[in-house]
Length: 271
Image 1 (cartoon, one colour):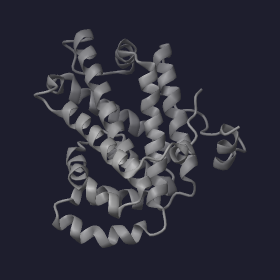
Image 2 (image 1 turned 90 degrees about the vertical axis):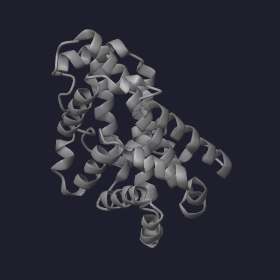
Image 3 (image 1 turned 180 degrees about the vertical axis):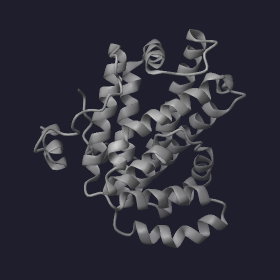
Image 4 (image 1 turned 60 degrees about the vertical axis):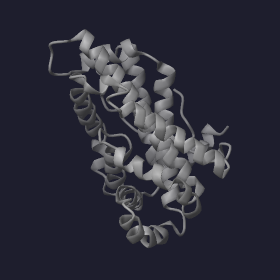
């Protein structure tokens, strides 16, 4: 099973300010077009809201163990509502589009890079949802409910295993990068200073997103270990779905083999 080391988030080639701004604008443009009903009529498919509600419920079940852990509950909730859930992120992303030049001067570059990853993750996830909804419409035009078997059929019909793997890559990189960027010294003070000006400038959704993320990650002992648990689970779910496993969403027995710590995992991956 492929595992993306969290160090990949920080070991990649750093973009200069101009390239980073261009990358953000490209990803925002893709995100906006794919949600535009005029440009993308599949946004009106009957199956799309059914699919998104079902996937949100599936993720909630997969995150039950995280939710039961007081130190991980906040980060798990943030993943479900702000990074990988079925929420509408259009206002947050519109805020980002408006302030890209200013953000380059105010926010750490690692945080800006992570925002770009989060936007790409949202766009790619929605693109898959559109393809799944279209496939479900063809496979079950009269059905109004979704189950594991029908979802698995549609998932395999859509295919694209390499892009599915990249989707999980983005979950890892965005989740890990955001966690560490928001725990960087001085970010809490910066967010507090920006709170009033951001809301006054109509950027409240972006400010709230960053503040929720900061609060969510604050209690985590090890960001890398938390993200590794999510990654291992989601890669196994994808493997099972492509293989036609009868119980693709059955929980994994353990996030890590006995005795492994987040540091041990990262060391082995970097060999």
